[in-house]
Length: 68
Image (cartoon, rainbow, N blue to C red; front, side, top):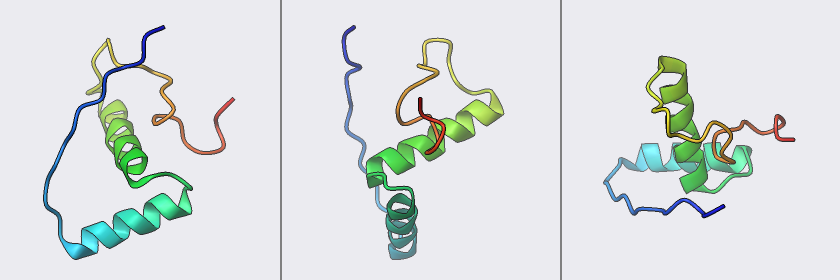
């Protein structure tokens, strides 16, 4: 199976947002990128915004403790 190609995203945030992201990622033992990806994908799934081609079981999409 071929790995999904990654793309770069860049945007500015407040220092408070950055610190919150650092704390959230650290508490979940994730990278900041993985934490942000998980949060956004989880939000989209809950709202029914995930496209049919989106992977349902990506490592970023599964909360800690529910991995098999």
